[in-house]
Length: 279
Ligand SMILES: NC(=O)c1ccc[n+]([C@@H]2O[C@H](COP(=O)([O-])OP(=O)(O)OC[C@H]3O[C@@H](n4cnc5c(N)ncnc54)[C@H](OP(=O)(O)O)[C@@H]3O)[C@@H](O)[C@H]2O)c1
Image (cartoon, rainbow, N blue to C red; front, side, top):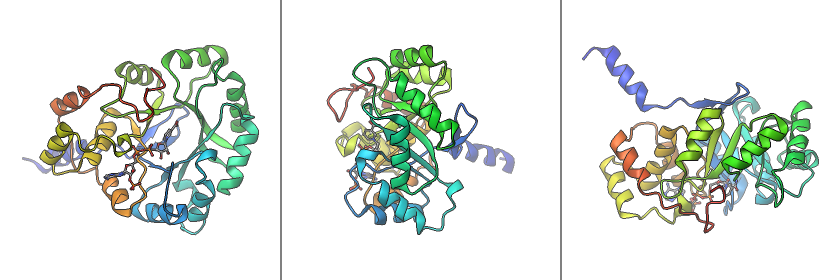
């Protein structure tokens, strides 16, 4: 086999390391979730930065922003190498909450700010206008939503004329939506997967463990790789250094198309919260 063919085949195993947002900016294909980081956040984020993580997902209500800011400050990693995602709550003044988040992170800007969930009434048009204002003055590069249904995104776009860069939703083979995937890819919206590891509730599933063993990987790595091959950006959370390293070691194998299809058949709309909020 000519060496060129080998190189090409190898390249297919490695998804690109970043995905392009509608704005043209690049976002890493994998990030660290920080909800319920139990160990000292500074230590956990420091070890993640050393391991190679460059995207961190947080929110004002995770109480990890100060620790993330502290870890970044001492890491020596340049700000432009990082991609910081934070969120505002549906009851917030979006502009003021963005400023407050940045103050905790000790950062001049965030890469992405998301509406954490749709408000009880409407689709968050005024929150969106607050985020747009934050974007105009350089507090954030891209803005998006979490937990929005297709209909809610359509309504937001109808009212504001602007697509969200990202919809961050609970997403795993056990709980996902093919129609959401189609809708987002048709519109250039990137899905970020929260609880991509099912909060460790389904890692012992028989079919998952058997398939992972065939690839010489563990179930968490298979779940992360499944996302990467779908073009979905997973945000696995891990306190433990070993877990953090395992979750990055997903670029050296490829799930076959028949196995990707088998993983899709595990869908039972599973949600760690009881119900997938975007369905
Ligand atoms: N937008 C939203 O509404 C929303 C909602 C929920 C979460 N999120 C974001 O999504 C992130 C991820 O979701 P999540 O934290 O709910 O759950 P998750 O990432 O699905 O699961 C985290 C659990 O998996 C364990 N784990 C990690 N790597 C592992 C490995 N290689 N092998 C075995 N177990 C492993 C972790 O253990 P250790 O920690 O002990 O290592 C932890 O118990 C959150 O942290 C947050 O940033 C967003």
